[in-house]
Image 1: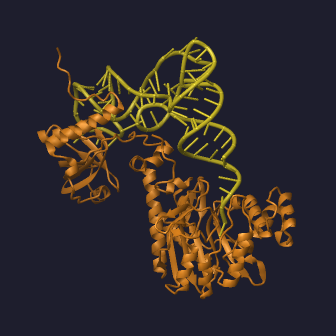
Image 2: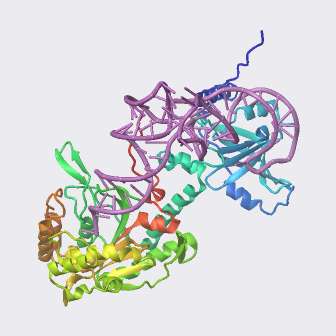
Length: 501
RNA sequence: GACCCCGUAGCUCAGCCGGUAGAGCAUCUGACUUUUAAUCAGGGUGUCGCGAGUUCAAAUCUCGCCGGGGUCACCA
């Protein structure tokens, strides 16, 4: 009878995994266990090779030896051409399969798509123009026991992309670009603020009271103290306490906040915010610094203040228009809420233009609702919306001569709020009164009454300098800067339900 | 939480007015060998998300569940 072939047949995907395990065993026997390798001395990144040897003409060989390493993305002509990918670029590797040693050809048979290899050799440009490393020596530095996604179409299924982000990163250039841009953006903001004398600080993630904003918090439990703790919904109150103490007159924090609310293309349960506080300035300084930060980010990432988003050009070049919230409503609906002071009348006016509001809402909440319904999504180009109702601004100073309007603005781009800033309220007695008012306002039947943060009131009573404060949504800014339609694109590991096994 | 859409091979997808699952990539065998999604010939691929129902017969129709996407609600 015929001898059966002992090499594994990849009849099924399970067999493919088994085949790779056999490949690993063969590799271990012949060349040693790749997982014992601890280092490879790279001399060049793929992009650096292409850059350094760019002057080579087609068909020209250099005498320069380089060592490169990366993941095997393509194998052509039985290993004659291998394409590797590192964190800078792809790079072609060449083996002369007619000339190479028995050892080399044995190794070539053991290389699979997805393996991590290190290669040393001379650089040349092929007759067809590709910068290539002629391998003198190749080492399999790590073995992929799972096959990579399809080499041309990559990983398309959004669920797989988010669940297996490492595969997405390897398979999808856009994902690499988007996430790198996001992290470079964060670095650019940090550097911008360092250069202006801001001190980066860290404040608690675990709060005994979830303050500084109104949102449902995630609740956890501390065993030793036997008490509930809340994941922070905002860092605001602690940051102010650091300024009160004089740690620095300029502080900022870029870090995570957690809100136990619905998910959407613009909401992830954990998201990143920038909050900064500067003593002895008011909200107008925050207007300027908002524009400067965002413009700096656009220049850093795009070399231009103009950025394309969803087929539209958004121009971040300062200055940006500043418009009153009530004035914008007037402009877009014809209703002038400055001429209305009675809450019931305001609700009726809202209803007359098709905005239903819950009974019991105050003037400011009605203005906010109408703005959200009729104006917000019209604000595509960067716009500072100023003069927000005091009622919805419990941590902001009101104007002395216009007591129901706060010294506050929100910045909108593409219909999204990306920044929120005010002249910080530093009057402890008024702050307590505002918190009391807030506690009275029942937001929904499920929402528990909001407790008053006595530690914060006490800190204010110790004396807080007048100051401006700013909050900025980093993920949304990242979306705008990377033309991403979902917040999940700019978060490496977005929150997901576990896949059932 | 409500509504709409989606879930077929490891990956990208076709099949879906019911008739018992198919292509490309990947993988295997062979040929070829300076390719660029290499090419050519041949082989194998699956709880058709899970469960139930209707039916002689279900990937296909119906219902429930799971997971994902979207719209809305929620979200200062």
